[in-house]
Amino acid sequence: MTDNMKGTKDGRKQPDFVPFHNMHIQLYERQYSEVLPSILASIAVYSETSKNDTLLYLSYYARGSFYRKKGLKDEALASMLQAEKISKNIKNPPGNVGFYSDIANLFFELQQYEDALQYYLDLLHKNDFSANKKLQGAIYNNIARCYANIDKHDYEKAESYYKKSLAFYGKFQDSLNLAAVHLNLGDLYFEQYKDRLAVDHLKKALLYSEVSEAVDIKDDIYFNLSLAMESAGQTKKALEFYKKYVEQLEGIWNRDRIWGLAEQEKKFIVDKKQTEIQLLEKEAKLQKMQLDTKRMQSNTFFSIAAVLLLLLLVGLYSYSQRIKKNRVIALQNIQLDELNATKDRLFSIIAHDLRTPVYLLKESNLRLKKALIKNELTDLEKQLDLNINMTENTYSMLDNLLYWSLEQKNGSFYKKEQLPLHSIVEQVLVNYGNALKIKDIRLDKNIPEGIQVYADSNAIKIVLRNIIDNAIKFTQDGGFIKIDAGIYENQAELVVKDNGIGINKAMLDTIKSGKTVRQKDTSGRTSTGLGLELCRIMTEKNAGRLMIESEEGKGTSVKIVLELVKK
Image (tube, rainbow, N blue to C red):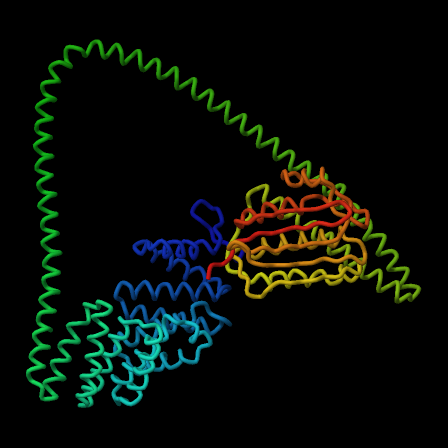
């Protein structure tokens, strides 16, 4: 059994990524009651193989998040700390800021304020902290709460971080969070007997809570205002705020009571309907008894009719089964013909298209040997470049043959992800420096770095490799190839254009119809035609399009349209 496969109950092999994939799908679809077995299976697989620290880290992270959602905070923290230990082996762990924020929050919820404070402070130095607008204000606020709650209260630092949180939320006019931070800051001043400052911030908290309709914190604001006013000697004001506090609690109680009454009303309606159903059932039973008497008189007729109908159904069933079997046989014959055609094509490619480059490589090696014996260094370097180019072309042909075969068997696996288009093109072009140099082809590129596409990395590289390879093969020595990219109508477009020998109209129409064609390149070698077919299949499976425009003698332009990552 290979390292990346596990046995199943029926003896077949299951890929190691299946438990993680199931876990990911169940979390995405919020199937929380079913996800724990998948999480534990994923941890077991990657703990055993020790070959994918990233997926093991994510599995422990998922288990911690699950336990936290279920209220098991100690177990959640233990899983998170295990995930943190594994993340030390990963260069750029996914979800870095959010992950450490979750650990800090768990320490805080468990009232381990010293540990929580250390994690919150470490977050400030993370590379992606400033980019995470969702967490910044909350982290500042939680740091302040830690300083206020640690054994050696540091009110000065707590005040400083509360003010940072206020400044952050103020930029976005976030009334709800501004109300919460002003409430916390008012409490801080009250603990230090700074009653005037406490009252000022509690009043601001009240104002923002009314703007944001933050009903759930209003009772705390009213209660704290009553305490602060009483401490400041304003007994009348304190009494007013305490009354509002009581009214707020009564409002919450009334709301809950209304919900309870609504539930009771709903139950009453259901019970009433149930009673009506029971009465209808009794009435139906009475009618059934009356009908039974009439049915007994016609039983003989129905028995005969049933026998005749049964014979008819048996005949129809036999006929339909025969038709179904004939259809299955016809479908199997069609599939067999397709498999035979695929097999014949593979043998044809292996027998003819691969024979030529291998023969040329053999002849080139003989010339290379002669140049080496004669110590003709110039010819030797030239022959080596030719050998490298022929080897790369042959490898590319074999690669296309492999992926085409997989597509015919529906065996390819696609994993779409966010990809930087500029980097993908640069990675592909690295392999073609020698081929461009041999044919003295000028390459122009204009690919903005900000374009992000959503596609499978391997599939897009294969598509680009085939298109660029064709452009080089069908462009004469001294020609040019231009690669442009841009965003049009919320889609990413990549255009590869050359001034090569081009394609005549009849052949272009054949290509656009989805059929493969054979064409000789500038060196006289005939291409298999698999490359463009493979490009079309892989582009469409990545929710994209492939468009070809060409004019014989003037060159070819290939446009790839891909899904753009939405910002």
